[in-house]
Image: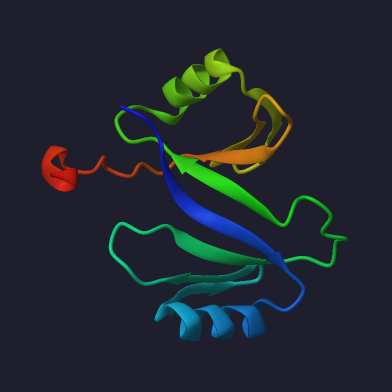
Amino acid sequence: MVSRIGDLVVKSRNPDRLSRFWCEALGYEVVATDETGIAISGAPNAPTILFERSNDSFGDSVLHLDLCPTDRSQADELERLVALGATKTDVVPSGSWHVLADPEGHKFCLMAKRIPAEPEDFHD
């Protein structure tokens, strides 16, 4: 099996405004809110979009992927991704996710939560 995208993370100076716009544009709804931002979702099996509060200069890091293992532990998936060429850049103190970089240096996160793989007949 492989990983699946669990969340799309968009840095935002105003997550309230941006999440309202995308909820309306996509027919999504707010599914979680906390001090880090606002998460929206809509379609089953579609990634959640998280508008992460940030005052940083956005540059090239406006968007990153959160990967979730489908059939193995986070540790096993971390080992597999590193073997494929990812590099470890940071471990979040809570231990719930790892920040990695792909072979060109684009950062992404490997989450602890698992998302089941799609059924075999999904694409028939």
